[in-house]
Structures are given as structure tokens and as C-alpha cells.
Image (cartoon, rainbow, N blue to C red):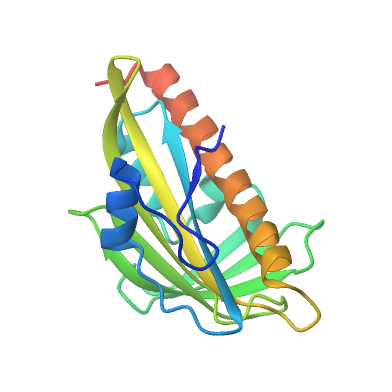
Length: 190
């Protein structure tokens, strides 16, 4: 289950849940007039170091992203590194060119921007943060992913957000499945 969708499709919120505090602190997007933005939360029953080891690999998104068939990264995981991603059939795209914007191993913050490709996601950028939590008395991880993207001509903000949120939900579910499977295999629940 992807946790509650927190935040907005432009800027509502409130309350004091921990995820809302993290979103306010780390998931700041300048949202233009013809753009949409949202934040999604996923609680994973696996320790943060394991989850972060998957998220931080800009050069290997296919380890948990089910729509990525291949990735070729140019450079050595520095800010500005570019990757060429091949997308599996079934999506309205075959390639995406993406740039690493931020990789903070201490704060567990990852950010990327799409800079090219044969898709309609223009001016897309996302931020992923990873936070420790306890789930059922064991170490777990809360992952928050937010994005901003232009609304393509012929689509509404709601349609665009729905499409991107569906992709992110699928990626977060897969991240949870892979992380929890690895945790069960290694017995790494500390």
C-alpha cells in the first residue's frame, strides 16, 4: 500500500504528521502556472540503509523501477551526471535522459531532473527522501517522493498528476517489494 498522498496538487496540507514536516523541509518545488506537483509516501518494512542503497543508485534504477529496461550512466554519480534510460513497452515513451541534481548520503536526499527523451514529461523534476521509522517493532523506512512537471497540451493538471502519481506508486511498491524481499533473505531487520 502506498501511504497517504500528502501535500497537494498545488499546495494544501496542514497538520503535524512527521511526513508533512519532511515534505515542508525537503520537498520544495517552484510550481508554475501550467505545472502540477504532488508528494507520495510509502512505508517499507526494511531498514533505511538497505532502502537507501537502492534509491541512491542513479546508475541502476532498474534494480527496483519496473518500467526501466536498461540504464547507461555517463560519469561517476556526481551532481550533473546524466543517464540514458530505456523504458519498457507499454508506456508512451521509449527513452528518457535524466540528470542527477542532488545525492546526499547523510540526509538521504536524492533528486533528478528529466532533460530529454521521447515522452511528454517536460520540466519534470523529483525529490526522494528516505527516513527511518519503526514498523511493527522493527526498523522500517518512510520514503517520500515528490515531483513537479509541466502539464502537456491537451491534458489537465489532474490528468497529468494522476499519470505521474500512478508511475511513482508503482515504483514505490516495487521498491518496497525488493527491499522487503532482500530483508527477508538476509535477515537484516536491525
